[in-house]
Length: 235
Image 1 (cartoon, rainbow, N blue to C red):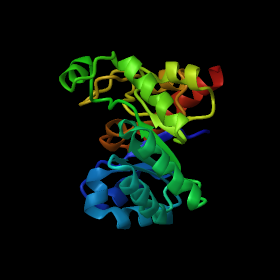
Image 2 (cartoon, rainbow, N blue to C red):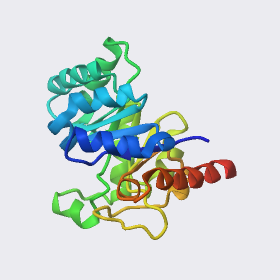
Image 3 (tube, rainbow, N blue to C red):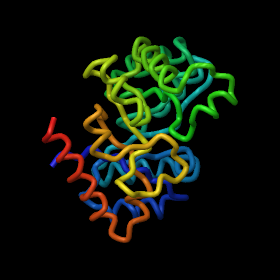
Image 4 (cartoon, rainbow, N blue to C red):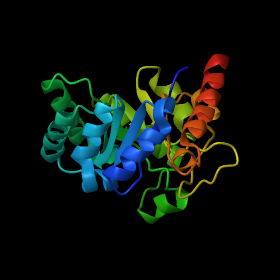
């Protein structure tokens, strides 16, 4: 069974993270460590995940001047993370700086550029002065990021089909905002089911609450794995 889930460890500290990983067990191979958990207990959590044989999606969404991001990426590599996020709105030089850090370290870490956060919709884009429609903004930023050395993108499942068509099979496309049919969408505004996201071209699915809030976390993860594999079998 292929496992394309990245479970979001949106918990306050290392103790809760360890308990969740143990509860999920073999149901998930990949975990997302975001800003809250990294600031609280980052090194301890990343060390624990490696000791448990898990892969790490370090979701820090780095966004600063190019040299600062380049150095921050270099610092993150000491944790042997598998994926690391930056913001595509940092523009060409910043993305190139992140890619340079990876190349100089001869690292296998994949730099993923965030296009438009899944918590944003068209009204939010208008509020911050972006005149493009969301789908056009995502496509433009996706092209910019990949052209400047990003290994892939973080995008909503609503835009992944177009990005896959435009960018081809090579870039890794990671989609948050994935919810099983009938699931609570929480603070996400652009969502899709796991099966649909895979059919549209997602490489990996970030899934948090549907697993983390389940009574039986392993069973919840396996149910999503089964939906993903059914979609893969139909391709």
